Length: 578
Image (tube, rainbow, N blue to C red; front, side, top):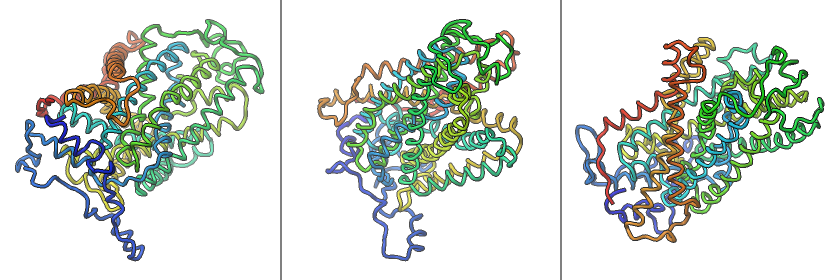
């Protein structure tokens, strides 16, 4: 936050316009020309878009603006992110479904199986419950900031303004890289998901990734409205699937499935797996080898689930990023934010509780659970155990849709973040190119080109997994850093708001948990980083691993942390005063 808070508030508080709305630059293109001409012209830069602040001084050597705050012009960055020219076409229904869709994906449908196998059912519920509290506090803080400042870049812009330009620079690029890498990873995951059906295995994986890449890129070239409509449909499908599974799971647990038999909470107790359990008859495990119980691998197992749970919620913050393109963020965003608590309770806690009573943690089919192996989904395994034919394929389609939804969000998240960084002179200015349809065109193209990394599947599954895992390690902790920064930015915002003599009653939306909630969220995020370090440096069974294996696993899990610290340390960062 700059020293003159009121000046920034007039430029960015809301949007800097008397009616609270930013200009709809994307709506100013001509409509009387032939459609072919309009189509071509739509890719041209919007002539009304504010590209840079008039009369701002530019360093001829670095190209960075020279302002009054240690070399960074906060006022200019605030003005440009407030008036970016992005199309404001997202309706309330889009915002609500983006909030839902961002929290339901492969983290819930697939990797929760690895969490169950690693820590047991009690660890699964405890860890996801704690991370649910973390996310509730974080999203509440984000909601307050985003309603007051619905600017391009959202949380990366908040880090720059309220914390430190160097930290904002590091957070923005780390978040952009996260989504840039996720695109090829999810496209490969989608192609592997198809291996669930034997017939799909006969088709070259390169053909599948080509189809998925074209679909995802095409959606994003329809602009924010295309992204919003796609996520609206994807989210509805995922919500229906989760609710359907909860109902089915209750029926199966009570003995209503084809295979019958009341299950109850038997798998929460030791040595309660029956000899006719599907893991033996279908999974092929040795008789008596499937363990059960509340906990597995002790406290370290709980910490491992803690980390997995945190990554499962990645993407929930996208609703804040989308606020800059909402037609009425002060109305639609609070509604979406207020429903987060119930979504966490229903979609995560209830569904995972159902999973925990249907499958023992010792089921070997869970051990392959990863974001690229739908066969290890605990949801699919539970349905298979019940002997319901056809339904596992239906749920696998849902998992495929969830994977494509993440891929769709990856282009959106990376392109908007890159465009905002360019607006703040923290990225090449070419990324700030906004066309007449309100699309960050160059950033979308850049993200789409990096999607071509999905063709590493041509080198075989082992080569693909190795390459993509190392790429993803560069930003594997991105969400944790982002969430912690949101909480800290909210704390700083409240301090600045009070220092300038403002009342909380002036805010259009207030966090339901206030500053205390932001402190809780910040501390929990820090604990996740500590837990990740511990489980990465000393993993379960590390005594049986070689030194090279331990080192490789550690850097795959924690490489992002030293990268972020190095970026912040090597970047000039002025002190921000109120």
